[in-house]
Amino acid sequence: MLRNLHVKNLALIDEAEVDFEKGLNILTGETGAGKSIIIGSINLALGEKVSKEMLRDNEENAFVELIFDVESDALKKALSGLDVYPEDDMLILSRKISGGRSIAKINGESVPASKMKAVSALLIDIHGQHEHQSLLKKQKHLEILDDYARNELSDIKSELKETYKKYREVTKELEEASLDEESRMRELSLLEYEIHEIEEAAVTADEDEVLETKYRKLLNGKKIMEAIHAAHGLLSMEDGSASELTGRAHRELSSVADYDEAIRGMADELLEIDNLLNDLNREIADYMDEAEFDDETFAGTEQRLDEINHLKAKYGHTIDEILASLEEKKEKAEKLQNYDIYHKKLMQQENALKETLQKQSEKASAIRKKYAKELAEKIREQLVDLNFLDVRFEMKFEQKETFGADGFDEVEFVIATNPGEPLKPLGSVASGGELSRIMLALKTVLAKNDEIETLIFDEIDTGISGRTAQMVSEKMHMIAEHHQVICITHLPQIAAMADAHFSIEKSVENETTISTIRRLTEDEQVTELARMLGGVRITDTVLESAREMLNLAQNAKK
Image 1 (cartoon, rainbow, N blue to C red):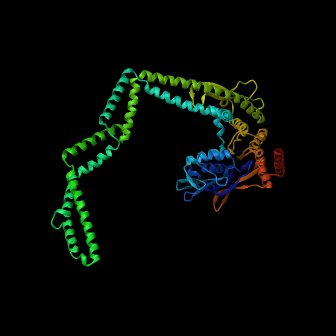
Image 2: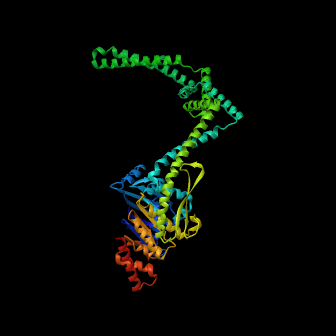
Image 3: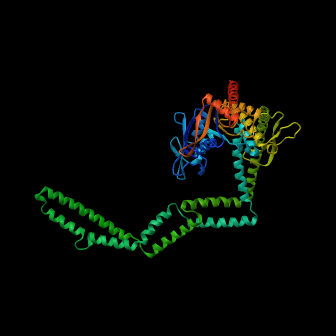
């Protein structure tokens, strides 16, 4: 659940901190007081895009931090799949915006916005004023039904997804393989030419590296030989060479070595140096004898490198890639040479996968239809409680012409709000306020199955009043028995049900408008309900009505 919200330098908020409670958390305030900023700041922390209008001052840093308590083992397991691990059953999500840049962090570790969104999807579910419009999309109806039936449906949906993936791969291969005789022979001819070209070259692993090393050596052959000859002369051939001087020095010291042990040691060292020089001179002489720096060797090496580079330009950047390309071309050529067998095999695979998809789709559809009746009836019962007195609510199934990753079902909610009316799609019947109530009915039914602990409702009570508002408040309370609910509302009937009531207020300080949020005491809650009931002038009668409303709501919760 969301334990704490901390906001700084965001829109009208200078700095605010809120500690939310379990159950139903209500946020109220005058129009324009900044209620939407609270939801906006939560969205911001959860990875949504930053709007310039949200920043209080371009010269200052804006900051939002959310602290969640994470106790569910299932949630911890899901988070671990994203490589996120709560510390002491706590998860801290924060976002800092500075100079047009933002930094998102989870438990102090910087993460990309995409990861923040993935994590937030496990923690919190936000329903805005226009969220109910999603009910007009058929795909949403299938998602809702599948979510309701997921315990029995999840395995077959996983199988469907995997089969559909294989089916798409085969159909794609079939499309690519559908060539007429002339095209097939033309492609086969090209493949055979390319295979011959690579095989004729007979390249071997790392051959290019060996040749490039040899080429560099040959390219600089003149310089190498000049340097080798010069070194050889300095060491052994010329008058005053190193070998000659070392030999003379050794003979001089040897003539007096018997008179001093120290001199004998130096004479031995000189002898060792002389031997090393002689060995080095032999190596240099051998190198000069074996070196091949003739034009023919150079031309042959250059030609072979050009041949390999030509293959690289056509078939891959490395010899390994060239050889891999050769195997691919051989495999493709073999398929084209035996095209009828290859094509027949693909067709058999496609038909087999179609049959599997058909069976899996039928199984999924049967499960959906079973749960659709159950879900539709539960939603209808909730709608009756929400003042749809003579409502009929069903789910209409149609079979798509093609398969999808979810099977072949197309599901649509249909409703009739008055006796004698035919069932019609939601968009043809329901108004904005009615869609809000339908969404609430759905949330009430799905609340026990919903694994996301925190739900936020941002004025989804738009278009609702009177007796219906009271019914909506009771549904909110029912959902809050299984979830933490944070609700922005303008209806006193809903506010009266609060387990924790917060007021958002706007004021002017030092010629600057700021919004603040604070938790209300019971007496302050009565005053706020009175404001919502009575408007500008709050009389004793309005206050008494507000207190009675609060008492009735609290008694109804027991």
